[in-house]
Image (cartoon, rainbow, N blue to C red; front, side, top):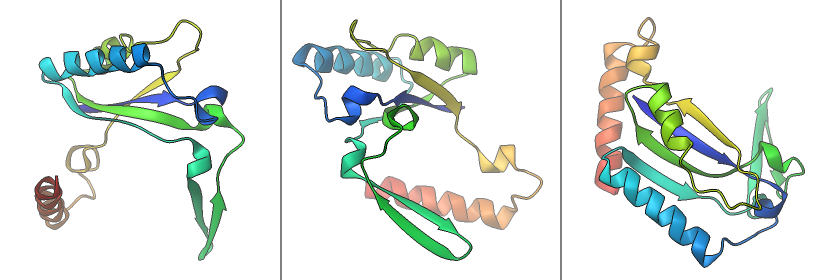
Amino acid sequence: MRFMIIIKSDEKTDAGRVPTEEEFAAMAEFNQEMADAGILLGAEGLLDSGMGARVLMSGGKTTITDGPFTESKELIAGFWLIKADSLEEAIDWASRVPSPPDIETSLEVRQVVSAAEDFAQTYTEQLREGEDKLREQIAENQ
């Protein structure tokens, strides 16, 4: 199973706070620990919402809203994509994320959908073959 560990943004991170050298080192060590354990599939941080935009599609119309966004606690500061045998194992890894003592760190752990398994009733063989080809193409682009 694949899980995403989502690190939530806060007022400081969404205001463009740059981690300290020590914080970067602790995160690099944590990422290396997950890589050495063979579970890390990806890990990235995101720039603050002022550097982004929201795209809303409704009723055939598209609305673009430039950042920054007011509710920083609803924003994502970064993520890890891991493979784990259970939600409990993914939570265990999330509980090890380095957290500076002066910052409240909020994480969310979510299982990544496997369309073939989780939606088997409507996910046809043709769709599965298309997804397999897409994954191969994505792997080639990396």
